[in-house]
Image 1 (cartoon, rainbow, N blue to C red):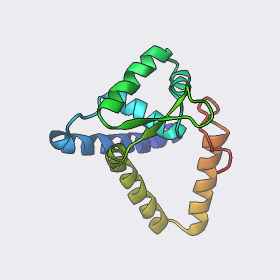
Image 2: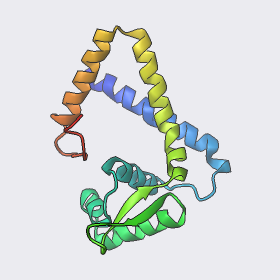
Image 3: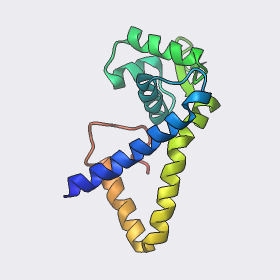
Image 4: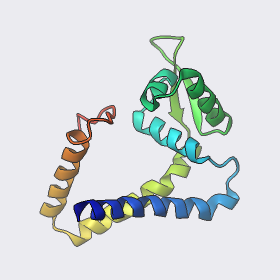
Length: 151
């Protein structure tokens, strides 16, 4: 039962995002492909990774990663910023164009979180937050996000 409930919530978040993307699809130039969307979400979650850090995380070759990154730079969703420490490296930074695209998803998360705060007691919300932190930090060791341990 828990698996079905969690799956339903996860699926609803995904489907809402897809609905909004398709609703706005006609007016978007250089829309992101599905793989590009996955790449951008990963880059945003990793902070400002280098191309090699991105490739390692995604378990793809650096040349394959570079090809995908260059396409995203051309479309205006990413910039490459030269590293201060090692001038041979470039960090990947999401642009405002991507943040505007991504806000379709984050706006809905915020809306649902506000509904949770209205529906449940502060104690229940604090318990949910604690449980989600445990799930993320302890029960999902396969996915290590930068800065997560400090949260």
